[in-house]
Image (cartoon, rainbow, N blue to C red; front, side, top):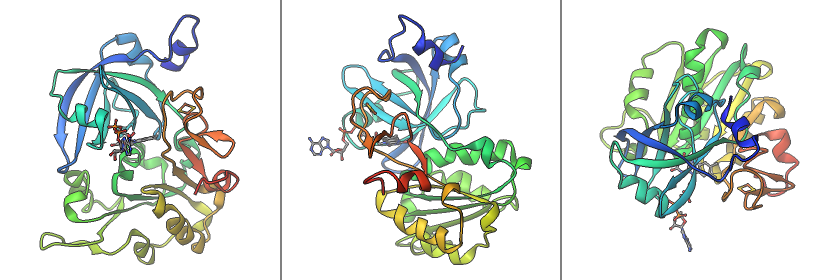
Length: 285
Ligand SMILES: Cc1cc2nc3c(=O)[nH]c(=O)nc-3n(C[C@H](O)[C@H](O)[C@H](O)COP(=O)(O)OP(=O)(O)OC[C@H]3O[C@@H](n4cnc5c(N)ncnc54)[C@H](O)[C@@H]3O)c2cc1C
Ligand code: FES
């Protein structure tokens, strides 16, 4: 039984966090860490199924909850990876935890990227800053089924080299010929050998087959309009451009009304929307 079905079962409380053990912590930057969690209850763990893009409500007992995207691919069975910036109460308390400590997890919640629909096509992924967190799940998912996709291009920008996340993996991937990976920073230092400038400037460096390409975008809100403009200049279809929206969330299950985007709720109708849907939602971008 999936976790979603467990929630639907009479008597199952969707606000109840599942206890999960921290099994690994990797420092990615000064402010971001990658936490690997293992849900303790075996049946919940087995039912924890998702496509790339959903989030969990992560709880630190006695502190509170925060929505965090799942960074690992669905194929990483039994474990969930969360890439978390130390930004406030909950994330700060998580950063104070160590391996073996117990946290709470509700979810997976929300609609992810249309992975099955993307199969057979080229994919262009564009990330800015922490936006790489949910896209990392999609990138790894595509990697698992690489033969089902055409060209895969990844454009990733950060403010400076110290803020590039997953650098250990991307340094290896730059040498692969089945992914086109281009990294850029706004401000370089002497260690930097990649591009300098905004992520949108990288569009001049790639060829896109507009009829055959899906776009996936995640980053700071200001980035979306400019990236979409570049995708539209390349004549990509509005209904093949997908983006993940972050809104203030509380319940994660469409009850509290905190995450309204136009007439929809980002927690259940998103957080991933396509551009066609977003254009029809007030204040979406
Ligand atoms: C769908 C979704 C996915 C997300 N995925 C990720 C992810 O993968 N990784 C990640 O790190 N984050 C992610 N976030 C963002 C994360 O949920 C927020 O940063 C969250 O607020 C952190 O909770 P917190 O309790 O640690 O921070 P909070 O204590 O809520 O603080 C967050 C920010 O708000 C400010 N703030 C808090 N209280 C006040 C106040 N009273 N007045 C003014 N400012 C205030 C803080 O200074 C801080 O800048 C995601 C959010 C959404 C909606
Ligand atoms: S977070 Fe409560 S309705 Fe979306």
